Length: 261
Image (cartoon, rainbow, N blue to C red; front, side, top):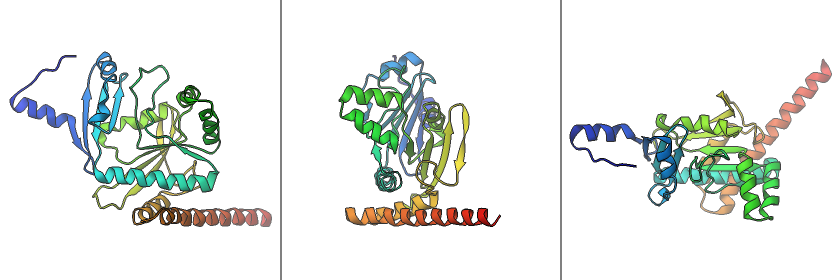
């Protein structure tokens, strides 16, 4: 790979074209290179300088992100929200830390590392079982089974291709959390994903018991203002119980309507 220094306005124009600032203040660099160069770059530990690195040799795309403080705070908060909610709603959840998602045939080090990724329910239980068998079995399971849920705190127009990649990798549901004005009061979108199909916006989660984007935003706000583990858990559990009661009322109303018909 050759790196050529450039001077003057041309260099400044090219720098501006590759650098983007996310709505939370994160700095994102998007570069294009030939597939072989991307594979060579995958051997470098980019995370020493950038916390989020996306190397796509198929599209010849390199995305480097230095997340802002707010980005990291919201990611940690979402991890807690999903952990508590999924435990209550499905009985099992396994967060996947530093999970780099890629096709099994893709070169090592390439792929995407979402802010949060989770196995939920049966997949969480299955993953626990293979963890007991050792690293090789766990790695094989991870390579063969996409997460049930992926959360991205900040996606810009420069890296929207990640959504398509998640779909192609078999991730069924994506949560997007955005905070356009950096106030710490986010808005959420849920999307159902299928390979080679446009994402479909969801009014409620298919993976987590009908939780809505508003439920998640309320839970995030409660967790961010909590100062103990018990307070954080209670902030999420309260919303989960409310959603469960609402679902029960809907089912009872539907059953009553069916009997009366």
